[in-house]
Image 1 (cartoon, helix red, strand yellow):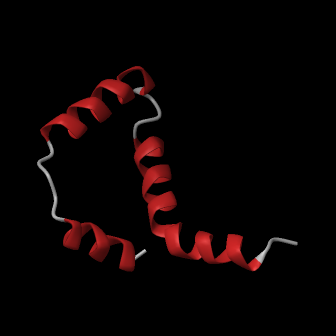
Image 2: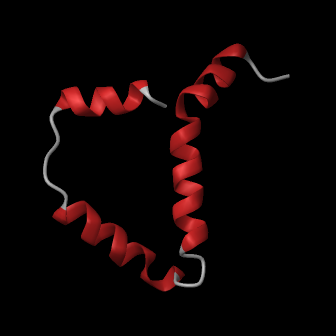
Length: 60
């Protein structure tokens, strides 16, 4: 039986897990480019204020 802490973490990050799954599922036929696309996205995305990052966590 899963602990309450594990369940609360799953509830908190459910949207992120779903987003990650959807990203990988949509690119399942192009797995050889997934690392380069992730690197490109990470290097071209500008800095985000901590306020916006915390706001995103609250919606998960």
